[in-house]
Image (cartoon, rainbow, N blue to C red):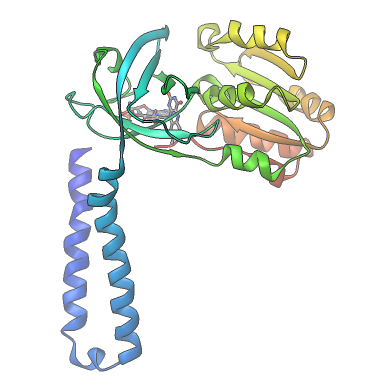
Length: 278
Ligand SMILES: Cc1cc2nc3c(=O)[nH]c(=O)nc-3n(C[C@H](O)[C@H](O)[C@H](O)COP(=O)(O)OP(=O)(O)OC[C@H]3O[C@@H](n4cnc5c(N)ncnc54)[C@H](O)[C@@H]3O)c2cc1C
């Protein structure tokens, strides 16, 4: 990974050489409109690059890890307390890093499961996949956290589809932003939430969601182990006319589910999801 980062950094050297090369060609320098465009374009790019590298880190939020526990064999729950309150929409994600813990200094994106504004607490449920996520259990409670964000358009996409019934389909940790949206919307909106996972234990927060469905008549909740079959998707679509669908999961799950929804007659514009690709 570090080799690939350094190879990408060589782009800066290449760009500077191209810049110097252009301004050293006499007949090009005499074409004023081109040179104006060239300098404006290069200037804007340079300012954006410098802001991204030196300005943006100064704006990062800070907090502290206050709880770290296993939810399932390969899913960890982290609770972070922010130093200052933040404006966070349900379904949003943030980039986090642990600047004082070796191996955790690089920012990674994670959806926010819950934000408790009064306590300034952010809760995450994170699948232990690779270099950063597999060793999360080793991060000690009390560790400093750097946070960039929040980002995401899930809440916004719901506002843009006001009046439609909401159907959420989530798989594994891909259901994290959908749980957050469900909790925030359920008092005012009808929501159908269908959750799948490859193993029973990966249906994290299952009893919480079942309790919520009992308490809130607006929530129609169902879960199962194993993917949704074509006929199940057709039944969901038949039951939920004039609906806006949000899908969350791995990229193959999202692509597959979105295709099944379209095959069952849902318009592409009525389906949305934010991929977990990083
Ligand atoms: C907007 C957004 C929100 C996200 N929210 C969450 C969340 O709430 N919970 C969560 O657990 N993750 C979430 N992710 C994914 C998470 O950011 C990555 O899994 C994590 O950064 C991987 O880092 P790593 O160094 O541990 O894995 P890497 O070392 O980069 O990868 C190791 C191996 O794991 C595989 N892998 C890594 N990530 C994934 C993935 N997402 N799907 C399938 N295979 C993968 C890779 O193919 C690779 O083989 C989110 C990603 C995005 C973009």
